[in-house]
Length: 174
Image (cartoon, rainbow, N blue to C red; front, side, top):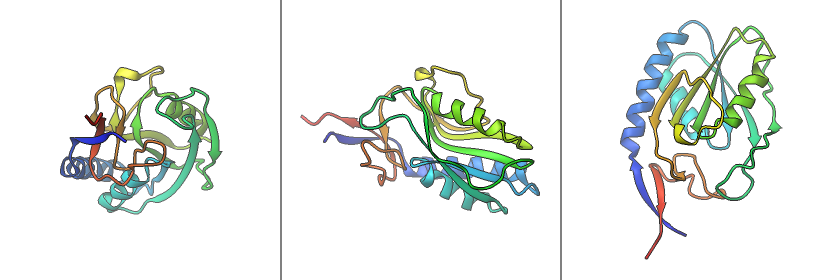
């Protein structure tokens, strides 16, 4: 396996999560938002973000599939696990680890909007606009990242390397 090279440190990530949480705390104070994490990648970010927000929230998850094995999305989105919490009339914040081509998040936002939430916004820690195939409105964004396959802080390569505390790219070992 290639050697991970740090591109965003755990300290930089922690600072950005705190910054996003401060803004979200202001925007959602008194609204009891429902945070919907997209499994599996977002669970690390969602956990840190929720604790940093330090206001009452509810949490649920969806699981969507478009990758399978490897580093390229198939482009076909499949709902594997649906939200269990009713969202009609709720303030919903979708929490995603990375927005790449935009297909998965666009699918989810369209899907959730039919359930008539009071508001529906998107928070992504990492944004890779160079790969975008469909536009998505990212209301809260942490970092813009280069067009490289990144791992760590919840992002994986074939279910490996999620545990890395920093955001990394893989370098070929010589």
